[in-house]
Image (cartoon, rainbow, N blue to C red):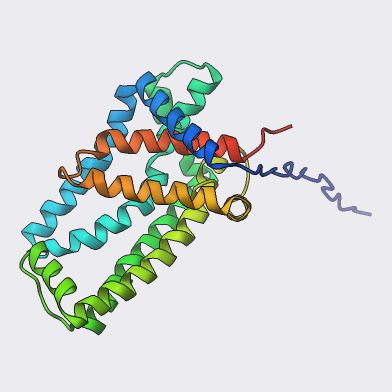
Length: 266
């Protein structure tokens, strides 16, 4: 008589993630920690910041070639949405500094490359999907409020949206919708990406804890998000070159914020 042997092995569930309550002082400490880490590994920071800045410049040049330079405004608004995922290498750098491990650039790149087999890769799809939805929403609102007008320059686009009723309607609704999209993605990624990099959790669990971290610390976390967006816009002014320094500092700061919000594993 044949018998079927069932595998009764139960995979243990990962321990629950404890979310701490933080203050505005922790936000200041995270930003200070981000600056310290940048000074400890400036070449690594400039490398990742350079990728981000070069991407912005390339997009601007492409849009200029295709005679739609006004698109740089909604793309610039959406840039902070994908910043957290770009900063994975900076999270790893801060983790190594904190642990006293050598800052081997090759090993850091290998950690980034290894994320394609982990849950962080799925988070990338979430981030890029929401970024795509933001661009689609801009296009839809343009059609609703401004028809299918074309703009020869950024100045022409700014003039229309700030001096005409239709343009101001587009600006008001677009800002509101964009704020909601940005808030959702901020809640999804601010703790979710460093958590998935640091621990073996599934995507949904990481997102849930990220939302919990924001809701439990709403005022300080929202203030951090506002600081990130405001500084990013300032960094755009010299043709994206401010991102060379700003992105790594904010990336390192996000790691320190994550370590303040999420209690250590036991």
